[in-house]
Image (cartoon, rainbow, N blue to C red):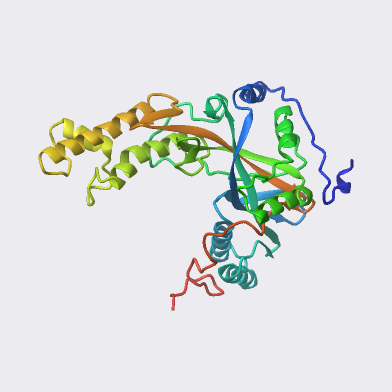
Length: 371
């Protein structure tokens, strides 16, 4: 089938290449092994972001707002900010700035999923988040997934962003395992009775309007084991180590404060690790009250000990206070049609309304006071 024949309901041909470079071949072998360990698929739901297409780039699009938002409006708000900063810092002249600010004004009051401004098409895109699962639960990071050779636990260290510079190319060659996954997931559709009728109808319609599937790079999420399922406790991260860092932060800083083990007003740089170490040296921990202070110190020591176990190696599963936490390898698929990536569906739920996010700008890019 020629690519020019692609139309509604027709899938594009999949171009497969066999990896021969040693590292890429190891990644492919790792993917084959993963199927035997976690060959089932569990679907969590949609994620949203923004893709852009410049003139002459078709059929390729590039991600300009990471596909990680939980509802379409968050994707629109991301586009709002992107265009506002472009108007403020990168507009070439007043005419371009006026066009950008007009687009921002629409996004402040309308649910706009696609617009063209200053020579670029922008589209809010929709991806499905899922994960592999098997007898051992959700799939953990693979040995060949990117991770720093020497873990850096400094919270000030900033790693790469999710989808940074990602180009969406439906004609790009894929490896055999990627091709099999794409073909297996082309028919992914909500069918269970627990889904409302409009959700199931939209999912069925998408099989015809956007018959192809593109796989986005994997992400890594901290999940918590519930009675019969797993639920996320952190957002997606670009590496497994970044997910471990988020769990370390929750154990040492966030949860002790949320649960009253670190009182309000304590030095914001202090955490369970530093305060329990200070208590062990016989110093003060910012608490008072004898037995209550001893109990609080013991709680902080337990949080610090759990975080230390997490730092003992490339730990992907941790039990703490009766709960099992795991670093899960999460994946995303984006449906593709003749005109590119799928946008939000009518049945997708918005958790917020359009609103103004930034202060107004004048035609010269100066920020105006909010009247």
